[in-house]
Image (cartoon, rainbow, N blue to C red; front, side, top):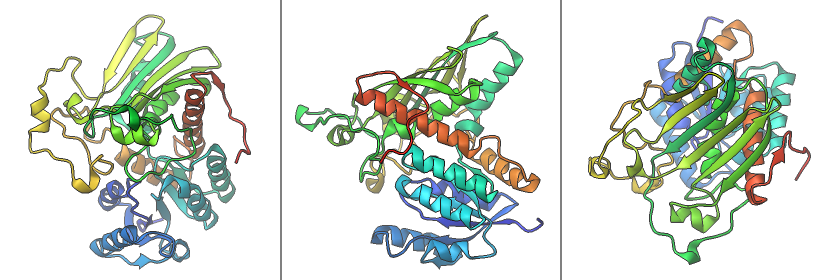
Length: 382
């Protein structure tokens, strides 16, 4: 194929990262944005206006239905960034139309929905990629370390993935609600942080272990933010995992407040092996000294329309190891290469499904008081 791959942008929902994907498509010589689409009759007016504004600013048509976009011959890749509850249906439709897929982080709201996407992609013979930290700097450095064998046989992994966003505040007892189980992901003011941030840490565990996670135990329900306490969702959570070989992995994932870290939040991995232990810090320094005013008084104020900073990054005083620590640009390059070479991406949708399954098991465990949950999870649940 000689022309650039045409990209259809499906929705600019505030629950997504579509606005972060736009500069990637614009910068890559093998992709170009050809249209924005959404189900105009099913979305609310604010999202409708956001979608139309993006189409106008990009100089491309806004299509009132996704089917209008899927019928276009100049659409090769569908960039799906709707609420998590709609992504599986959109992905299945896109694959059925013979389009390749770029799916924002989670393919579906349940393991059955994720299975449906995996099956649809395989049946259609299209390529699909879920951008994640699999292509980021922390995973690449961890895999390089394992290849060069400084720790010996890998015995265990620990990952901290925390975002320094939002303003922690005192929480009154009357604001606390019971921990909400998996299945409700969309909220007006909050994201579920174990899901949103913990997925990156689980992705690193997947990369380091050469066998699937077999057992999961989780803990959650502590709060920094009243917004989460009032909805029974989580600021952060911890998971303990093991694989069939008995190797263990632990993660801490979530949101810890804006003035807690000068690099926007800790992102590090600890590899424990038979000969030694190695710590890899994607935010560079092993020792940090900083003052809270350095962050909160340095021309920083959250956007009142994005108070919890869903769509904006934290203030960063210290640079990361990589300018693309999330690996989004490398992920797009991988998808384009997979299309050019007619091969499956190195992080296929089946792995993305497994990532979500681990997190769902973690939520089940938290609701069951930390009980161990075996994988795979049962299918066919409502």
